[in-house]
Length: 469
Image (cartoon, rainbow, N blue to C red; front, side):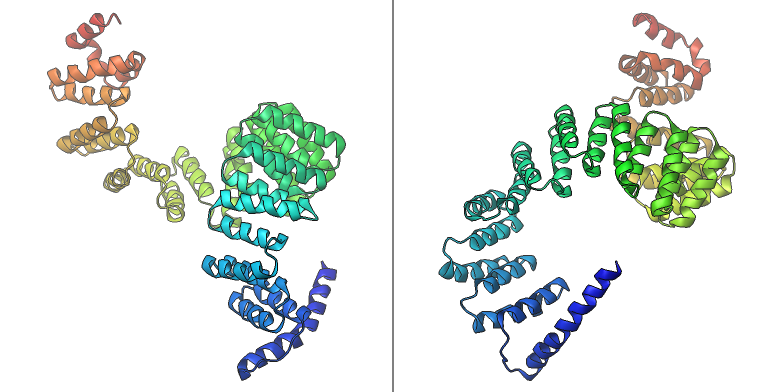
């Protein structure tokens, strides 16, 4: 790290006088001579530091002073492309055509411009033309692969990615994209076979072992996945993503204690994060150890005040513990961080309702429905709240709205039918009961738990007899 810092300081010492001289020239509105290397250093410096206009200015002067040097025209086209000025980039290419009408740089730059414009088929045409001129085809193969990926041609992308990896077995981006293509093609088994062969030849490539683990886990080959991820960690003990993947596999196989320990192992190399504390907290929740879970979830929000998921889990935990005020506080914090999360809103409504804050809960239910959330549970719970508030007409209106939006929900139909019977609207109630039984006859048991008196209803029993239930 220190060597890199020293190198950067040396580069700055070399280029600073050059920058000062160039900017002094601009202030004086004069034109001084710079050689090709100096202009290249200046334009690269400005571009890499986000000063695209000054980079373009440097290149513009360079082209005037060194018209035979095509590298500046290529730079100008690239800078215009990066600045989303595709017309300017194409204009630069016309100048390049006069110097190298069928050169490698021309084809590569044209491809880059068309790729940026979203014209991937045209980009492919020029990358393939560049490939014929390339001294190092491995520079072009990954770019062709990207265009195929952008077009959804994952088989063709794999072809060029494999060529890229053959040329450079340490290309981690190619490894990642190969794994991605196998996944998107839903060819997990083929992907596993590829990475097994690759790791046989390159046993110290931790990234390949990592992706072998991910593909194996998706195919539910959990033990193979764990072996592969252990190899990745063995090769590089600082490979934090591998610890997280191992922990996820352990969670999926219900080995929560080992998963928590794996997250903790990563602390030695990366240090704890709010997310890792949160995941450990979830492991302890799954182990039915609420005190330990609360401890780690609390650490999670102390480490990361923006972790809404941790606030949400603490709200659920406090609600279970009947600590209403704390539950309301934590769900409020979760909603501050993610105001549009309907799960958080629904939980907030339930917590307020259980805490006896019925008017507050009513406002939250209204907010959920206004946001377009149409889950039957919302309408049923909201209606029940309105009945608790003796707002019977409003409660029925909510149920009618809910059943209209969820006509295929058996529970919704059972619920409206139950309230209609309670309000002695038996003819209409029969219609909804028949529909509910047709949708899901088994859910009638839950219906009778909610409305036990209706077990004795003659009309309901007749409907059940007619349905042979």
